[in-house]
Amino acid sequence: MPLAVIETRDMEKIGLGIARCEDVVVSKDGKVWASDQASACAEILPDGSLRRVGKAGGAPNGINMDAQGRIIIANFGVYEGEDGPLQRLDVDTGEIESLASEIDGQTLTACNYPIVAKDGTIYCTHSTWANPWPKALDGRTDGFVFRVTPDGAVEKLADGLKFANGCCLDEDESHLYVCQTAGGNVVRYPVLADGRLGAREDYGPVLGTFPTAQADPDNLPTPADMADWPYTDGNGFDVEGNLWVTLPAANKVVAITPQREVVTIAHDPTGEVLNDPTNVTWGGADMKDVYFGSIGTDYVIKARSPVAGMKLIHQR
Image (tube, rainbow, N blue to C red):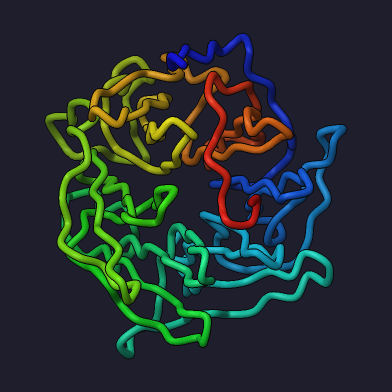
């Protein structure tokens, strides 16, 4: 099925009032959850209102769900000058559990995005040690990937990344795909038999053109001037093997096809509706409800996807 463009007129704003919603996850029974700095996560109810649960502290960022229906939260604490652990939320009780707070003796400050494998292993990115974090957009290579195994062991698996951001596994879990924000691209690693990662390779091209000078987050150009900026954020697969990638500075979502061609899925040059998209998630009975989180708005975008999303472990 061709990757038709999702027009802004077909996008709906839901969850109004959400605070810094980096990401969305949809449970097997269809409940829509969003990361929420005012709590830990908030359920977006069918009428669009919010039911806030827990208190994570810091800045809940990328989220995912395990097979037991618990939400895994990557906390980007450096956003608030705090620690940034990998956490787990019990959606029934609101209890927050820390799964990883340090690695190799160093306190985690910028956990960004988790993905859960079928054996329960959690892979998570850590963007940078920079504080404040925008310094890391200079291309430094202090981002990394770590895992937490079902027995609770924490291990760094890959480093040298230019602001490690969103990550996902393909359907057979043969590769882990990671967005390098300051690299403007996606890289992937083969997943080895023991769950560790092999040698890195680029997956597709740089997704735009970098500005001639490093961007100042407090003094950005107009949306039109940033329309081709390639800073990558979140990613996820549809059922046809297209890897969707969000480009927040450009207010754009693209897909890298299995042939490594790049197709634009959605673009809002004005940023009036699709503004600063940070992650992509699918749900619904046919897996064609698509959601875009954003740390730049107080709402979540919901639309209909031209292709069904790949079911994640908790949705199978």
